[in-house]
Length: 146
Image 1 (spheres, rainbow, N blue to C red):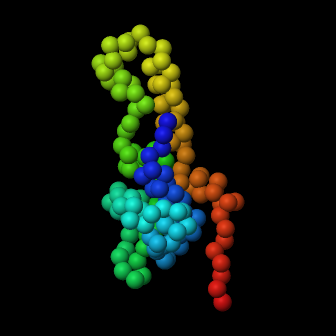
Image 2: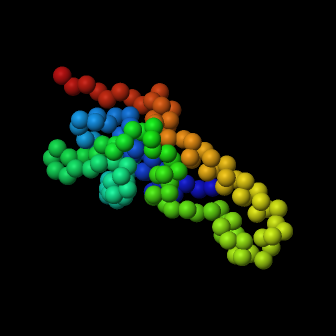
């Protein structure tokens, strides 16, 4: 299974907001892009989608930026993947058995269905908050300037 870049960037941006975001002060796109090594123009597109979908609130201007629209513990990876990429089964025949004349007697199809269900279970039970907690030990504190 391959994770699309759009999903990777979206999840990284949400985790960044969960870890470093201040509910009273929006985080700038530039700051997220630098910390997460994401090209800023592409990140802008992803953040626009996340804003329209209600994951974040965005504000333009000098004091603008992004904040999570709800608690990180309420945003599942399934929601993010569905929003940014839609549904994509590993094989066409999983969604529609008519796509392959061998579907009804294919052990391989059954295995790929099991794989898809396992991935689905991980995505619906893992939140951005869970990932933020896993990421916390790897996150460098921001330098303090006097």
